[in-house]
Image 1 (cartoon, rainbow, N blue to C red):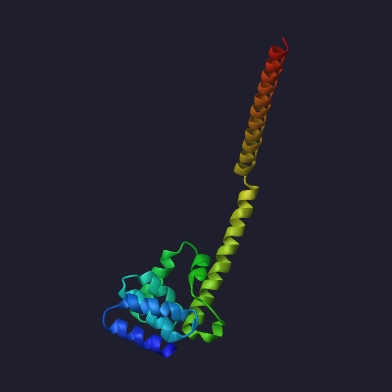
Image 2: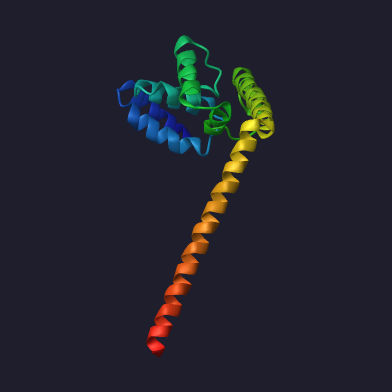
Length: 172
């Protein structure tokens, strides 16, 4: 049956119906996530649909290194804001050893970038926590909270005065 999916996908690509190939291969990917032929054909379907970033998402995990693949992979990397997001969008399933050496190298480089970005974010957060601007913003929050407390107190006082007034009117 899985072979039938590949035959249908190849036929769809050959006859100019990449959306058919995309739909069939997307279903097959759930069961054959590390199958290079599925990933290559799925990337080709997206490429023919004019979606290089999506093609790059699948070709990222293959051994394909031609110009189209490199362009698609670059488009994929540009389509995400962070390396962590790129890693999360890859259809990576199963052990990394099941993928070709080129794909393993790409994923490992991306993982190193995620770690580096995490260190940079942690350092930036530590600098922000020590910054004088943060101390000023802390006083701003204190004053804001004090202002809210005063408004709540005045509202409660107004309600109490109104309630006392209504009760006095009712008793007279």
